[in-house]
Image 1 (cartoon, one colour):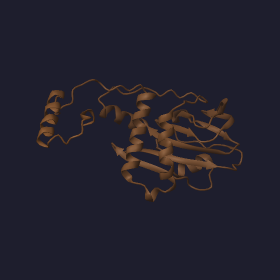
Image 2 (cartoon, rainbow, N blue to C red):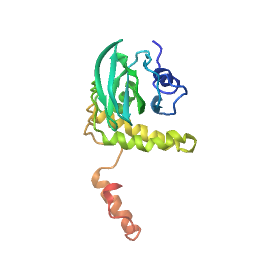
Image 3 (cartoon, rainbow, N blue to C red):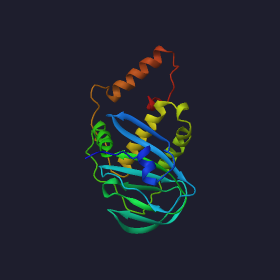
Image 4 (tube, one colour):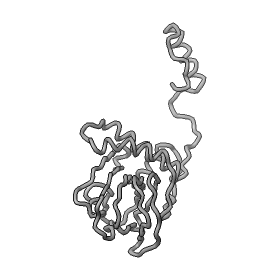
Length: 224
């Protein structure tokens, strides 16, 4: 099955936009693509949003304006209507072919998160793989972390050539970890780090360095 990722031209077709919306993409996690796209249309023509080839992925959407009485579709039929609120975060499972009736101005950030990215995060954290995320049509989450990450990425979306690549990679990595923990229930296993120093060894090393440098190290060693 052909995979279609939710950014760039695919989002333009999905929302019937005149131009390709700006997207930022990272491939820093096992070469898996994670992306964020800003979409906006202040004068849309009434229509049903386009379909997407089904794939094992999620779209986490931060709404930047209200969208009252939104008609939501799944698997080619209307399932509910809901008042979408600005500042709230909504989760969509792309396997059910989510759509909505476009009949009002909209402005959103859409984070594309494939299952492979969640698996990569749990593997790095040596944690069990997370199950399905709690995607409930029309049910938003008050998520200040997503709002802060989205707010930080908005200037980068509007000036991508001026944005540091490390900042994009770190922001989207932090987003993925947050979703895995908050909505997927990921918990890192309490295992000792391999090849690292024991806590008492770290403390002794800091004390030795402090002595050698004449007490010039900062005292908040808990951040070392």
